[in-house]
Image (cartoon, rainbow, N blue to C red):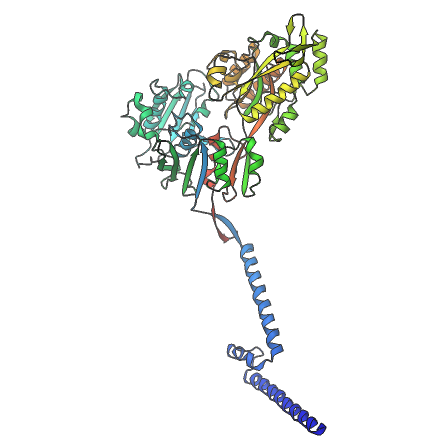
Length: 604
């Protein structure tokens, strides 16, 4: 039995040896038929037939490695040799609060009106993304030596959205409409005494009564098409259908709007103007959706029903920041918030040391952290666009002990008082006078929070502070116009030009002026008047720095902070490149550079 098994194994070994020998001869034959050391395609096809199982597995692994490495090299090479650039196409959907009424640059009243007007209409000049004035419908302009005449040369390649040519007549007509009382334009006050005259079809002049440095900044208003508006009586202008379906010269033109059952506009669409005289946008369409409140707008952003919201109040930021797909553009504004003292309404506020004590007791750092989550800048004086705050101004850093010492030095002592509801308070008293102040502000979460912090700070030094919260729809009519407040916590937006004249010159103490502190100082009046009369920037700046110094010394208001404007957008929207804005519509300053689609080209 053992011999038979041994014989069988011997036979199998001989067969295996024969097969291996034949296999070696086959390889030699294949190699001999090809003079090259590298196999041909035909030979590679037969490779599996001449490989054993182990070699086949190795070949498969090696082939996979080669394919993967080649793919990696190709992908890396593609991204190394090419660059991503914006591509035409796509749309942007934004949520706005309220609804448009007058999509008309000379009648616009709400932010929604101004937002849409900014896209559809063009002005002679515009503010670019760096907050510099640049030509738009104008090619260039000259200012006369006496600074009273401005001559503008207009572009000759501009067409209205209905393809009619744009000419100087449109400019003159728009200015006349602004000045016509029957139009009731919000811009009318800025153009009193201004004469617009057509020189030829593409030249127009403006003449003003006295030198006025901020004048150029006024010429960013949108121009209306005379050929469409001329036949509409001014008294009926606000009823015209052109206020809803306007014709402009801007990069975007009206496409459609949709209303709800009550007649309110719920969405508004503009599309790219292919005949635009400037650089065409990448986006093809922008859709605006309108909401009754910020809660609804923010929910729409969270659910991706919109890709941006025009403005994000501070109280919504913590919740929304859970969404990782949102970019938050925190934009600087030429706006400051202050407590303005009305010394006529409360005689105690006419006393310098009392205003100083209130300033020393105001905890600005707590306001910034608790009310604004550090999104803003603490200030000590009236900030102005394009001008750094004067470093030499008097500052009142938070020092409640110094505030107490100042009051006690002047005879104000703490005494206990009990209110009608049985609560006992410590308040300062001097003779028959109690140190009591009414602090008024608008009904907005961040301002209410700020007011509460100020009240707490003032109460702690013995100043009884009573808060008065006014509905935002009534603050102008019921409080600001009649100057019906003792101390007003409010924000002022100076716009793009640094001119503080409307806010601090004594001629502006009464409505429609905006001197909320009812501040009168002859030196300040002269500085502001002189600054308006020169186009020499260094001279203007010198006057404004001195103005800041005097206001900080006189302390007609406690300057608190510059807030930021938070503009949230989905990260899919690319190209936003702004640092600051003057008004909300300025967020569209570089909208022609926004994009959602990309393509790759060979790098330079």
